[in-house]
Length: 483
Image (cartoon, rainbow, N blue to C red; front, side, top):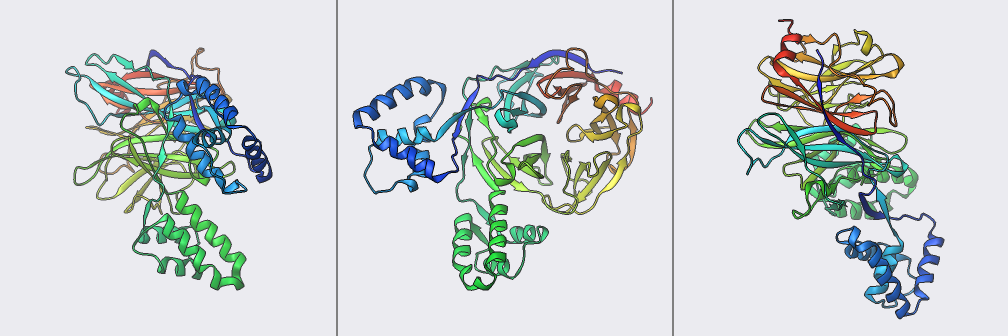
């Protein structure tokens, strides 16, 4: 059986630009640039600023606020305490700001979840959120969103995004739980005597500022091991920076919110977020996403969580089995434990259990590449979807000519280590309209959803654009169970 393509194409739009810091590493250059701006007469400053704002202000929201924030970040390079006009501060901030076209290279690897707000819809319709991996200059990836609706006839409509895109405001002084933070230090092999001294000086819940202040004070008594403790301090701060929170304003539409790399581990991108609507034992709903952070050398699996798509908490995943790409969380606990589909060895699919969402210690092999279209490797295409027959999992397989296809398998509802069935042939392989892109011959998804009797499969086309396909759930389950 084959999935049916809808013909919807979600193309990258290079006109969607955001502002971000323009970073110059050479301090001497920074001082020279600021010095040149300071030589301008006040009238020249006003003239330059007027021209600047006429060119860029209509392209962005809250641009002046960003310029002033950039000035605050750069004012440490000023050589005097001279009082500056607001216009000159704005101009200095502008010289250390740049535009970034976040979708200029690609818009791909979509993941789909139902929107937390299902109000004001016709009967039988549901509103969904599509997350996508946007890639721009320097191959830096971020997470962007689209809003859509499926009606009772399974007709899909994607809302056209606005022209604006905005990164989040960091929650600048997040609070950390000491017990959880200490456990993560153990996993990173950073809990030496110096680290224990720092933790002992902190309250059970502490802020990033508390942590910084403690390190500054306590590093002094350890001067005989200064180099070692500097490395420990750097590792502790890096861990803290990789566990952060971001916030958007409610007046920013969903398509305007962009999760752009923030932490040191993400400096080269946030890749392939697999979103899932998770229902806890008490009925609480949280949207989680597992994704891959990339610093240019090493990949780091991370966890994102939100209840409203306005406030997001980002955390590191830890444990010996947290490695490789493609971890996908089940939408609820199974027999009292968190469960995850994973692929630690680049080719097989594993099942993982854990008592703690942030720590993963064991894995169990459940599927090996078996059919020609998956001989190179297997992987999941998003979180398992619960059906009456079992856990339905979209998969990807890589075959000859490194061609990626999308398949499916079914796991037992009570014991997901039991494979009830798998497709011998893929649901979706690249057609002639989907073969060309940054990575040719690839169809790939990070998660679908069931509406009525149809499985909705958002998928990427050769790491360039995205589309959506559908398949009958009844027919698919019958095929998987050989009925």
